[in-house]
Length: 319
Image (cartoon, rainbow, N blue to C red; front, side, top):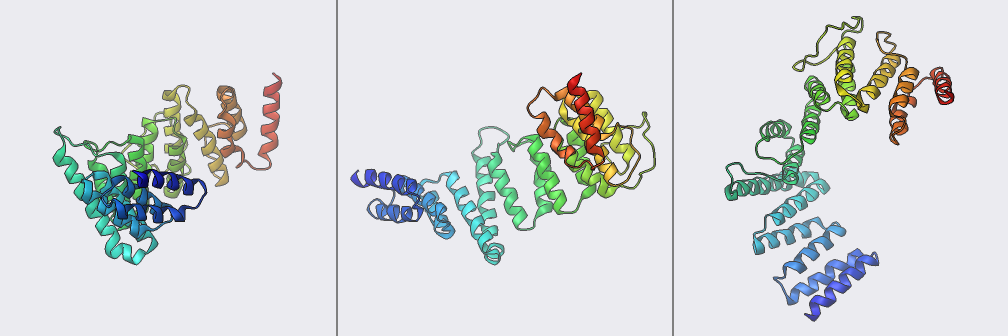
């Protein structure tokens, strides 16, 4: 009891004094007297984490899992192996990453076996750890397959799932598939400006048609990548008409106009950047986020356009 109390006090003291290198020695000593103390082992693990002793923290995590059979400690083991592999890439490819993958897959199987329901639910952090190891091993196609099949048993937000699918498609150079994913995400969640930026970047990478004018009867196709200004414009018109009072579509219009001007493409049915900024201020100027939103547009205006914007905003302020 005396050892327990003193170890806890000294551990907190070293932490507060910013001397993390003394913490492992403290709990190593305590474990000589109580070798099966789960509390001391977890504190020792955290102590090794603070001083980046990845091999030692992995050894402690292994002992903890053997002692308690707690699934969380197997993930500590896998994370430690990942850090070891990142520190030594050759060792990572040969041993650390494959072993981490094996541990995670075994833990997933155990979750499914012990599940009381017909569909076992795997926590998001476990699934993300699994995907990270697959990426480190260059198994990006496998990661995409897992993301496609994870809808029934993985607890993961749909927006995050889309981001991950885009991430792995980007690694694999699947620009067209990224474009389709961004477009579907915009239609599902039109206020998320992050998706518009990725959508525009992939559109301009794939851009083929810069001459066909906007056709009001043209329809959005969610199964095909967009490669023309008309398709980009059509998507923005659609989400603007259906989105209501959300900021994403209006900000995206200004973004598109600026991108077209930067590339000297004159084909656009929207107003000038200055007028679009004014319209944005009129709709969302009462929100604190409004002016921070507009920095991504204003910073990219040409020197000739900035005086026009100032004049328009001054006139709006005085009316």
